[in-house]
Length: 219
Image 1 (cartoon, rainbow, N blue to C red):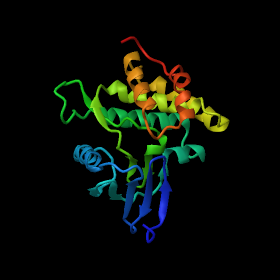
Image 2 (cartoon, one colour):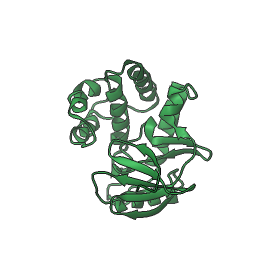
Image 3 (cartoon, rainbow, N blue to C red):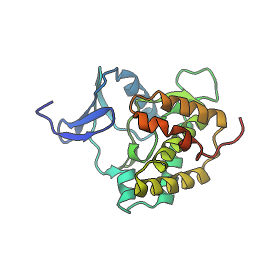
Image 4 (cartoon, helix red, strand yellow):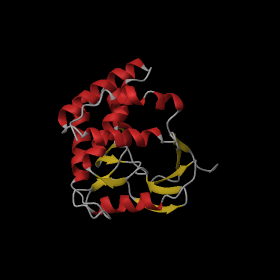
């Protein structure tokens, strides 16, 4: 990929510019991107905002090159207030959870993103667009809510004080706007994070403290 500019480097993937309209997202640990592309195609057909997928082969996804910035960047720059960001996240959850699961026979199951946080929402000229669908699955909607809350809580207990304060405010705002997830679904989210290879040992050691910040209901 020496001929293509590196646009971003995340925890487990690099994004390269192919041209003015396309990027290549390459997973460093390998894997198969076809399932991710299929989920994106399914939700896109229902009108959910995702990048256009041009190709998926092995660990490589060729995607629409989006303009704008992440919701996180907009919040840190003071262009989006915490309450507005929470409203946006809640709306994206609700829109996604209106879509029936593709495979599950349980009518209560929905498509889940399972990584829907401010860094995975792009604010573009065509509106908010949700990126990074690698963790997508099917299941109860409150598992997705629990996962978003847990990820925000992880940042809230991090040693980066300025970012932690913003994350705690974001968690509080998000939690006030959604029905509380069941405690059982927070445990499922916690188990998923414990085995996430993108998290460091230090980050995993803080998961219980993060989970304690997430409001839940019985069940």
